[in-house]
Amino acid sequence: MVMFSFTRMRAIGRSEAPARAERPCVESGRVVGASVTGRDLRIDLIRGLALWMIFLDHTAGNPLNRITYGHVALPDALDIFVFLSGLSCGILYGKLILAHGFVAAQTRALRRAGQLYVAQVLIGFVNIACYFAFRPLLDSDYLATYDVALLAQEPLRAVGAMLGLVYTPQMMDILPLYLILVLATPAFVLLLTRSQAVALALSASLWLAAAAIPGFTIPSLGLAGEASYDPFSWQLLFCIGLWLGKRHYVDGVPFRPRRSLLAVCWMIVAIGFAARHAGMLFGDPDAYAWAVEPSVVRSHIHPARLINFLAWVYLVAAYLRADSGLVRSRWTESLRLCGRHSLEVFCAAAPVSIVATIAVLKYGPTFTLEAIATVTGVAAMIAVARFMDHRRMRRRHARDVAPERRLQRAGART
Picture 1 (cartoon, rainbow, N blue to C red):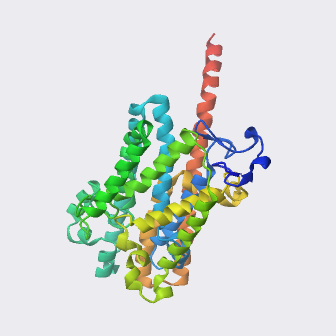
Picture 2: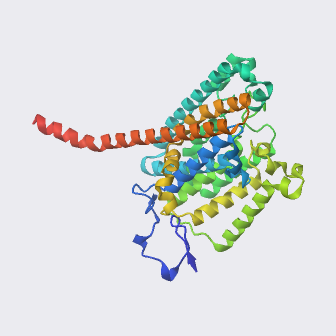
């Protein structure tokens, strides 16, 4: 037989299994052996990579977006971000509910939703500023492609709709989805503690309803008339992440991949790659439009897209160890920091992406312009991530030394 540990992710024979205390495992929601703080660095690493790919995919003319995840699989970087956000929330809010109850978890969710709303408003003002600053350069194709037509025709109405989260031009369609999902997280995690089967069945039912019932979505004042990413559909991927985060990190249930399922996942991944490049391989791209062009099924999660993504998740979880050199390497530190401070990093990348897209529209996709945009965007993300991490460390140090200083002041008074 073969035994696997969720965080070790490497097959070992039973006779070769080291002592329990010597191998990484999940104990009381803490990943032993992952990092000095018990944080699973793989989550930060892969989420940081997803943020970089989202930036590349949203920057027009960037040749590097040809090697992002969306060109080797049916999903794209957004799927990674939504799933890992659910995984992280499952860990965080699962622990909060166990330790302090539902009210504390919902309060935390409301505070996080407030941060997301502020970030959304800031990106909205960046869109407004860029539109009015570069208005002579923007043609009708740009207005239609990046959903800026309402801002061009009715600026005041567009601003109000942005504040109401029902109008989401360039780089503004991800955060409203995340905001809604975060607000619903404590209730779903609480339901998971009562019955995992009922919670997952409810999530799957919403997903099916979103696909089967026309108009079962959140309306939008954009050109499509509905949310770019339907939360009733995308919640399924987020809730799967919530379930896995709570199950493996909070409840401590180990993950043991099976060789038969690994083989099936490899087959699904291969089929997904072929479907993504169906136009090149089979010469009939129209028949595979749902796979070749992600925007065709962007608002809803296509079943094939979901299955393909879950196969990728299973393979990565099985082969990428939490204590591997790649995860802990100093060369991947910037990616880990970007993943740890994902909201601030996304806000740093959005203005660069918007300005770069307008510049490409004006001057064309030249190598120099693309290189400048890519370097500037990645540098901005890394700089913000390092600044936020430095500030976090300073706050932690101040919190750790505060009791000692109070004791010293009390001793001086006596």
